[in-house]
Length: 429
Image 1 (cartoon, one colour):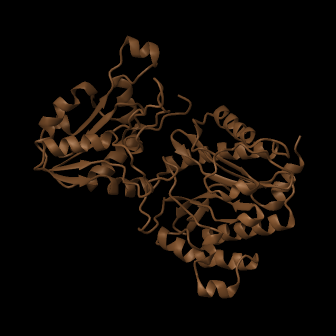
Image 2 (cartoon, helix red, strand yellow):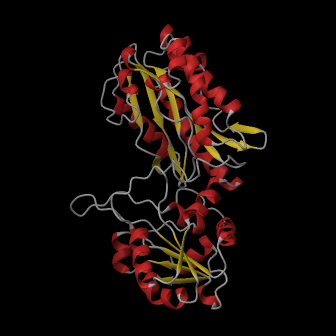
Image 3 (cartoon, helix red, strand yellow):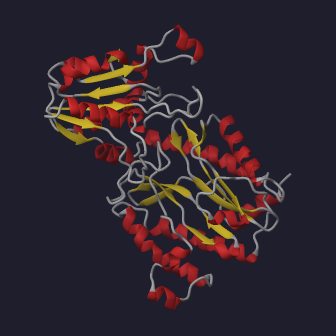
């Protein structure tokens, strides 16, 4: 393993938190993610279901978990099911969890091979009044194919139609949104690796390099520092490409006089950082680039100071924050005051996206955007201004932790001031 395992007590406590939210007489069922086919006999890189991982620490395909805390039969109160290995699997795929290793990771005492799951589910589920099924209910998810969780839910609801069915997702969203001190440390490690990657770019970027070369510098730094890799497909957007919010071609040449927008993140121990910076390809901001950049910097500082605090609501903050974007657009000569009076949403021509999202085991992590922020939430803060007609797109993104008194910037070590970026780039080899 590239990184130290978290203590089993973390996962034991997580399961206690979930079980405390269940109704009496309830069973909850969780499954791992599918391995998704690519082409021929290849599959896409596999990633564990984040809810199952948060509850068990088990990072292996074909795993399942049953939680039934008040089951009269103690054999079904907490059960983990794993893929049974054999000599062929060991030869072709490598080591899989032994039952002993799975216990040491998760703290779960009763562990079976998964081929007995359906056989053992029946005598457990008939003792329950309520069944909690876990589906992907992220409000930005695009569910085009039925995954293992959906297939299992459909099968169980068909076979046991008289049970009361409940959703695990709202419970998991609230629990996972509040990060423990252990999780914050994992996030800080992912952030520090991203910091190293960004500083590497400051010493590398110059006129004539290709965007994909910049991407390669990042992955080099991430892997050499024990990261799993990119947290998401990085956006390496020079010049006008920065005005395409999810530009991922990364195939243009970085030209003298262009800004380069880099939206990147490192995954470390399944936790993710999410960083955006804009740097001048030639090492020096033009007067206009600096104006736009510093406007976005002011927006980020305003968001951190005024909105990222307990009790505020993410979606409401997004609505209210539009007036600050409008003010900066007026200062930049992009909008006139009377335009904003007539249409308070006129700023959306220059910034169409939200300013923050939850961050954790997923880059767009679990959390309820219409509920109040809590101590322990981790958010991105990423305002942007995109001026297509000028070929300038600026976004600045930091990650913050909500505390009792406001928010703490988790990225203070990552350069973002104009003078610091220019000074570091002036020292390029």
